[in-house]
Length: 359
Image 1: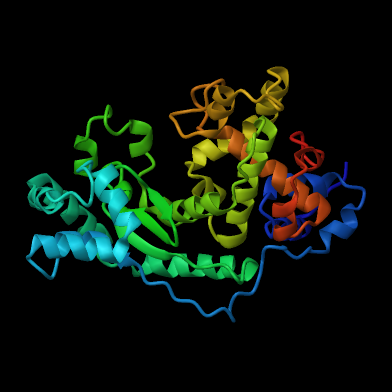
Image 2 (image 1 turned 90 degrees about the vertical axis):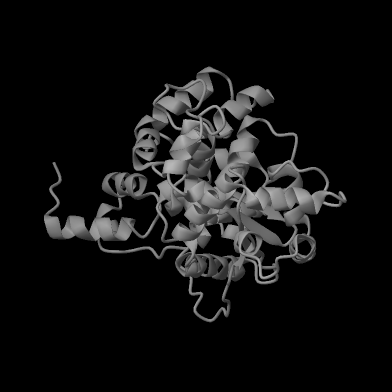
């Protein structure tokens, strides 16, 4: 049996950590005929890019502060200012998240005044402001992410970041050239107000992920899905690979975030996927799901929920998205495709050929 001393093994680990699939890469290195060459050479990470020359500084607009601590006391003026400044995002907030009818209703200002004056709403805002009054750390992370985004898409518009109170309806919402982030969705599962909301209104699986560590990744993920997800008459394979492409973009623009944070899992959920990958793949094959166009079956593996229907209850939701992510990563590694080439590739079966869950 080939023995590898600790010093050599450390070289293997350092090299493979440059890539996102540490476990899969380590297995490949240990069992390739080119073992000795692999032990002493580190391939550069294609997603390790230099963004130092990209000038960008993102400062978030704080709609929730302007709503609950307005400079004016004239409610008509407040309503008009918010509508004028935030347009469709404020309209969405007022009409859909608050459910107060048309933003152009003559009584809209009165509805808004009642909402702002509500004691519970005031308490919600105080909780949000206590946790997120200083948003600078998040702004720094968002700025770095969009520098990476700008590296790959230099001509793309960088969205205006707007924080707001979503009435526990939305983590993030991309609309036109704005990206709204619902700060109430990141108060934390142990926050007393969050705990007091009935699970019939706010399910426990959502509460469990209301951690601020997900805030930046969630915002970027919503933006990328809105901009790059390939809308088509998808079968299951196309759906999960299209989602996998977005997750690979997350690798590119959030290189310092863990896989768990990027997809919105706990570490335990991520470990479950990694340990169960072969079993998941066997289920997809045995159930003949890969080329199914049954939207209900596709949704079972791609939408958020307490777990993935069709898999054990200890599974996380969106396991199909995670599998699609691994397919795309394998294809990128196998072919050396750039981020832009990968996005342009619509031959999903070609991408599938690089996938080997047994590695």
